[in-house]
Length: 255
Image (cartoon, rainbow, N blue to C red; front, side, top):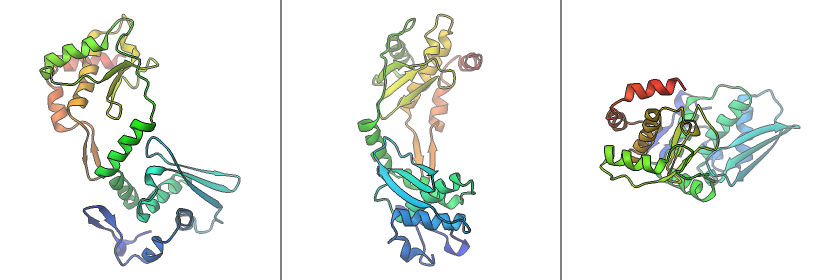
């Protein structure tokens, strides 16, 4: 664990350890399993460490998992992190082990890990992985009561001068009340909850949800440092162009 004299210095590529870090020389020669063993000893110094197995898996995202079973600690890490700098592997070790053993995670490790994932080249790799490995169900625009393609084109002309390229459009598999709609940039698709494809569903609510997701198509997520802003200032300003915004939001609350 870094103390106040071992703070990191920020560089253009992220964070690096200062020369004052007492374990810096060994950090870069440790295997992932050795890193996890050392971090575990730091978090639980009186606990006999179990057998540790670390493997990299072909995931469609950057998710990683950890499990303790029958005295063996198994860590599965997305292969996009294979070859990541040792301080990033260490930061993930603190995050996963901290959650497993319910220990507070020093903010410096969460910050370092998020900063790495937010780097442009890493985000590009993750998006490519989702495109290649991820599966995306898109039902098509035609529903029982509404056609999303017709709705998209009407809103496109009304609010975007017809300049938005039409993505894949589809209805969700299930009738979801929590996820009303989402835009998936990896597969260039807008998916709308089937809750709006019912005769009793208010058309205004459906229009607003589609308009909201079209704004995500127009204003991509802003990445800056560790921050990931889904709804930027420009996004919020453009959203206010929807003439019955307050009424539409009230309708969504009643769902």
